[in-house]
Image (cartoon, rainbow, N blue to C red; front, side, top):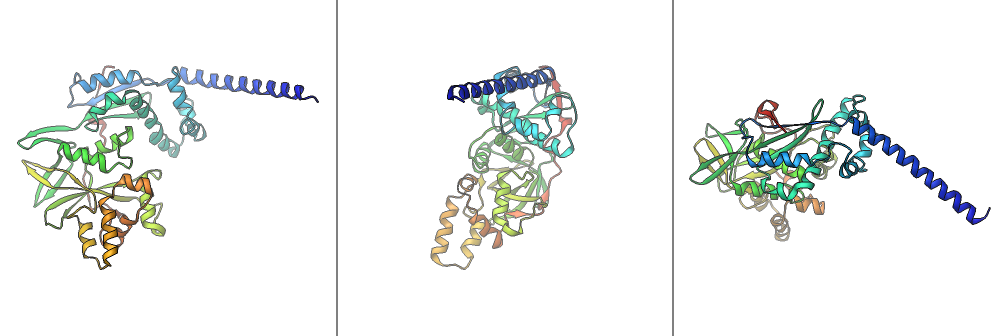
Length: 367
């Protein structure tokens, strides 16, 4: 056979494959377009439907590609990290209203796909959204017959020391026999966003995480610093195996790591604390190892050579989740864990009965 004949046959084959692929994608497009889900908007019952964040959110949500009609939606739905995962994990029938996936698949769907919609929202409107974050929250939740967009914000109280930001009324701690609402200064919230995100920046998922850490301080422990001042250690449950915190647990615990175990990781300390009316207010946030923290005191007392102490102190000064995510170096956290300052627990010391998300607090508003 001549080379020209082989080239012509190869070209015809590629054209046929291209047509078949285009037809298949068009069929999928038609199904999804026909069965696309509507959306509903809910706001915290204490919010004003006419406040700027609500009005702006309505405008932003209208831009989100909830159907396959826009090129952006096609890109997200067919992204290898999400679209193919949906196909392989049997989420495609759910999207098309053809069938229900099993419970394990549904959980993965709930974890991953709303994040895709939220990320689309953030990417389209990030310049407009950033001024509101992390003081406001816009959560995307798949409902039985629609996408649900849930808007809420941190509550505020004016004091002689400035504005106090707080969340759930059950986000409390008992100090000296008195139960107090946990509040934050703006500075403390900014440090929380800076020091507990592994990327050091706010995207859709990180902003939601920070909001929840303020709104619902659920896993915590009252501790005393080296200067005898009280501080609140805050923990986070490591629920997703794909999360960065789970890699920290693996790296620190080594062969003792148990995939069946739910771990609680110490994020930071709220310190210093001011007592204002019925609030205990965090002025800023200390990363484990900062001066006067139990970790710093332990290192200064631990028997070791001058050079070893100098080396670990230098690592302390530069430690952060962003640094750990960049280097994959968990040596310092492992040192704390193994020498009397646990960073990873199998049971949270105190658990507040405050839900991170309560459907009863929301009311539906017009789109």
